[in-house]
Amino acid sequence: MNNQPLESISIAQPHPVNTSLRQKMALALVAVGLLFVLVTWASRQVWNPLLSLTGSLVTLSVGTLWYAFETYKGSLPGIKNNGVMFRSLSNRGVWGWMVGVFITAFYVCLYWFPKMLGGLVQMFDPLSMFIRGRAADQWFVYGTFYTLAVLLLGVKFMLKYRHNRYQQIRTISVMFFQLGFSFLIPAWMLLMNQPEFYFTYFWPLKYDYLFPNTVNWLTNSYAHLGVFLVFWGAVMSFIAVPVLTYFFGKRWYCSWVCGCGALAETAGDSFRTLSDKSLSAWKLERWLIHSVLVFIIITTILLWANSWKQGAILGEYSMGFSKTYGFLIGSMFSGVIGTGFYPIFGNRVWCRFGCPQAALLGIFQKFFSRFRITTNGGQCISCGNCSTYCEMGIDVKSYAQRGQDIVRASCVGCGICSAVCPRGVLRLENGSVDLMDRAKYPE
Ligand code: SF4
Ligand code: SF4
Image (cartoon, rainbow, N blue to C red; front, side):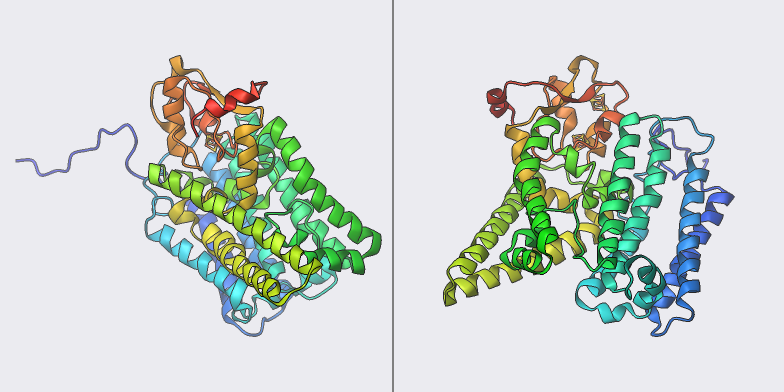
């Protein structure tokens, strides 16, 4: 009897694609950069911060870019997701858990035990002095790593989707907003002794921007600029959000501008398949995300009510609400779970289950928007690619099979379902639609 194992005849290639020698060398460079970071994290005093910082950031950057070019060079344009279900990193394997634990540990130190970041903060002093005119703190370290991840993995994403104009422009957009509006401009404002303000985040995502304390602080300490910043925040929250969502759907923010979306779309690209597609996840999503929205609305109203008419009980409640929200949602959910758990729950776990901005944009998208994904049902071969790669856990295939437009509150308009469809069934459109009729679309 022949005991040789049978060769697989699966067309899905069950074995991970081989890593070439050059890719291994590039990964070794990334590992050296990470080792630099770990050693400084573990040490109290950093030897020559400038040299250490340059060494770690350069090796991390060169290694990542080299790996990306080696991966896609010479290959035909087209979606490259080969082996994603079989890699330990992207199928909740050992590497996935290790990365998840590492990022979670980083977030825990960042939010609650910044002293445990050791020499890491000191290592960033030279860069912080250069662009902000002051020593680094843990948030500057975080912002730099975050921006670097969006830029480097954004380049990788653009190489992977180089045949797709929508993905190219969208990625340039998130890289631009992350680098300019979430990193450089706030840093330069600090350099000029102005408040560190993030123009692309507004209430309810940046929940404290419309809290009375922040409004008073900005208007009292920064005169006209402070008034302008409060005005900007209010206009974006109450005018730009509904108007832009009416024309473009929530994608204008979630997939083109927002920093959380920027990281999810670039660094989180390999984890799209991990989003839970079950009905129970959908039910949980709707309860959770709308509860968070209600939570922040009540908190904001209580804080304003207390600032107008102070009372012991009102003061206690408003403080209790704002502290609980800050801890549970602002730190735990958006940071620790939202990013640390990418390799376990997928790249949009925060955007799907917790973000109050996404909840608000989703309500507008569902009921008052021209955006929808149209389907040419006759062409659908039910391969399921679209559902598999939808990071928001939407069962796109079921809509395509019925030839029904997709009008879902949670869809962030990333366009990946359309990009991976081998039959060109799905199109993202901002067409005119009878608004009253939108209620007929199943949610
Ligand atoms: S339905 Fe398509 S465009 Fe919408 S979130 Fe899912 S993959 Fe992205
Ligand atoms: S990827 Fe295209 S062909 Fe495949 S199930 Fe989805 S809509 Fe149908």
